[in-house]
Length: 112
Ligand code: AMP
Ligand code: ZN
Image (cartoon, rainbow, N blue to C red; front, top):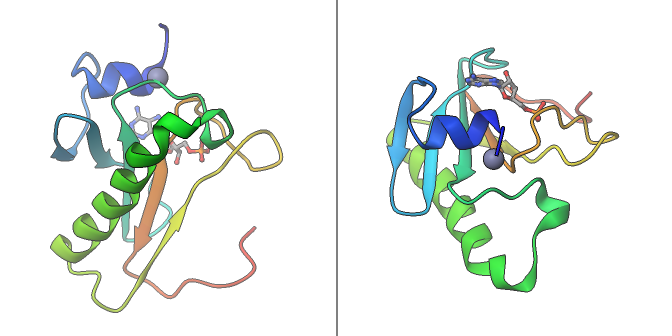
Protein backbone atom coordinates (compact mmCIF):
# COMPACT_ATOMS: atom_id res chain seq x y z
CA UNK A 1 0.00 0.00 0.00
CA UNK A 2 1.64 3.21 -1.17
CA UNK A 3 0.09 5.48 1.47
CA UNK A 4 2.09 8.16 3.26
CA UNK A 5 0.00 7.95 6.46
CA UNK A 6 0.27 4.15 6.58
CA UNK A 7 4.04 4.62 6.36
CA UNK A 8 4.01 7.26 9.10
CA UNK A 9 1.95 4.98 11.37
CA UNK A 10 4.42 2.14 10.71
CA UNK A 11 7.40 4.38 11.49
CA UNK A 12 8.73 4.08 7.93
CA UNK A 13 8.46 7.85 7.41
CA UNK A 14 9.48 10.10 10.30
CA UNK A 15 6.91 12.24 12.08
CA UNK A 16 6.61 14.25 15.29
CA UNK A 17 4.59 11.64 17.18
CA UNK A 18 2.30 12.73 19.99
CA UNK A 19 0.40 9.49 20.66
CA UNK A 20 0.43 5.83 19.71
CA UNK A 21 -1.61 2.85 20.85
CA UNK A 22 -2.63 -0.43 19.26
CA UNK A 23 -5.12 1.15 16.85
CA UNK A 24 -4.41 4.88 16.69
CA UNK A 25 -1.42 7.10 15.83
CA UNK A 26 -1.17 10.90 16.17
CA UNK A 27 1.49 13.34 15.01
CA UNK A 28 2.04 17.02 14.32
CA UNK A 29 0.88 18.31 10.95
CA UNK A 30 3.87 19.22 8.78
CA UNK A 31 2.17 22.46 7.64
CA UNK A 32 0.31 23.71 10.74
CA UNK A 33 -2.77 25.90 10.24
CA UNK A 34 -2.98 26.85 13.92
CA UNK A 35 -0.48 27.10 16.81
CA UNK A 36 -1.50 23.53 17.66
CA UNK A 37 -2.30 21.24 14.73
CA UNK A 38 -2.22 17.49 15.29
CA UNK A 39 -3.40 14.70 12.97
CA UNK A 40 -5.05 11.60 14.46
CA UNK A 41 -5.23 8.53 12.23
CA UNK A 42 -6.25 4.89 12.48
CA UNK A 43 -3.37 2.46 11.95
CA UNK A 44 -5.73 0.54 9.69
CA UNK A 45 -5.94 2.05 6.21
CA UNK A 46 -9.32 3.65 5.62
CA UNK A 47 -9.31 5.90 2.56
CA UNK A 48 -11.76 8.43 4.04
CA UNK A 49 -14.67 8.80 6.42
CA UNK A 50 -16.90 7.90 3.47
CA UNK A 51 -15.20 4.48 3.35
CA UNK A 52 -16.09 3.61 6.95
CA UNK A 53 -18.32 0.58 7.46
CA UNK A 54 -20.50 -0.54 10.38
CA UNK A 55 -17.59 -2.56 11.79
CA UNK A 56 -15.55 0.64 12.05
CA UNK A 57 -17.87 2.33 14.55
CA UNK A 58 -15.69 1.58 17.58
CA UNK A 59 -12.59 2.77 15.75
CA UNK A 60 -14.28 6.04 14.78
CA UNK A 61 -15.29 6.61 18.40
CA UNK A 62 -11.76 5.81 19.51
CA UNK A 63 -10.36 8.42 17.11
CA UNK A 64 -12.67 11.12 18.48
CA UNK A 65 -11.96 10.23 22.07
CA UNK A 66 -8.23 10.24 21.38
CA UNK A 67 -8.59 13.74 19.90
CA UNK A 68 -10.25 14.92 23.11
CA UNK A 69 -7.54 13.34 25.27
CA UNK A 70 -4.73 14.88 23.19
CA UNK A 71 -6.47 18.27 23.34
CA UNK A 72 -6.58 18.02 27.12
CA UNK A 73 -2.94 16.89 27.34
CA UNK A 74 -1.84 19.78 25.12
CA UNK A 75 -3.58 22.47 27.15
CA UNK A 76 -6.38 23.28 24.74
CA UNK A 77 -8.60 24.12 27.69
CA UNK A 78 -10.19 27.11 25.95
CA UNK A 79 -11.42 24.96 23.08
CA UNK A 80 -10.37 23.46 19.79
CA UNK A 81 -11.74 22.23 16.50
CA UNK A 82 -11.77 18.75 14.98
CA UNK A 83 -12.03 18.57 11.18
CA UNK A 84 -12.35 15.56 8.87
CA UNK A 85 -11.88 16.60 5.25
CA UNK A 86 -13.66 14.02 3.10
CA UNK A 87 -13.50 13.64 -0.67
CA UNK A 88 -12.76 16.22 -3.37
CA UNK A 89 -15.23 18.89 -2.27
CA UNK A 90 -14.26 18.27 1.33
CA UNK A 91 -10.72 19.30 0.44
CA UNK A 92 -9.16 15.94 1.34
CA UNK A 93 -5.61 15.68 -0.02
CA UNK A 94 -4.27 12.59 1.78
CA UNK A 95 -6.41 9.53 1.19
CA UNK A 96 -6.07 7.90 4.60
CA UNK A 97 -8.69 8.96 7.15
CA UNK A 98 -7.35 11.64 9.51
CA UNK A 99 -8.79 13.97 12.11
CA UNK A 100 -7.30 17.45 12.23
CA UNK A 101 -7.10 18.69 15.83
CA UNK A 102 -6.63 22.46 15.71
CA UNK A 103 -6.17 24.75 18.68
CA UNK A 104 -4.30 27.62 20.22
CA UNK A 105 -6.20 30.40 18.46
CA UNK A 106 -9.77 31.59 17.90
CA UNK A 107 -11.54 29.55 15.21
CA UNK A 108 -14.07 31.12 12.85
CA UNK A 109 -17.17 30.02 11.02
CA UNK A 110 -17.70 29.22 8.23
CA UNK A 111 -14.38 27.54 7.48
CA UNK A 112 -12.90 28.00 4.01
P1 AMP B 1 -6.25 17.02 4.18
O1 AMP B 1 -5.90 18.12 3.21
O2 AMP B 1 -7.43 17.28 5.03
O3 AMP B 1 -6.31 15.69 3.48
O4 AMP B 1 -5.05 16.97 5.22
C1 AMP B 1 -3.81 16.41 4.94
C2 AMP B 1 -2.85 17.00 5.93
O5 AMP B 1 -1.69 16.20 5.98
C3 AMP B 1 -2.38 18.42 5.58
O6 AMP B 1 -2.71 19.31 6.63
C4 AMP B 1 -0.87 18.27 5.41
O7 AMP B 1 -0.14 19.38 5.88
C5 AMP B 1 -0.58 17.02 6.21
N1 AMP B 1 0.59 16.26 5.82
C6 AMP B 1 0.90 15.82 4.59
N2 AMP B 1 2.05 15.13 4.61
C7 AMP B 1 2.47 15.11 5.90
C8 AMP B 1 3.58 14.56 6.59
N3 AMP B 1 4.54 13.85 5.95
N4 AMP B 1 3.70 14.75 7.92
C9 AMP B 1 2.75 15.45 8.59
N5 AMP B 1 1.66 15.98 8.00
C10 AMP B 1 1.53 15.83 6.68
ZN1 ZN C 1 -3.06 4.46 4.56
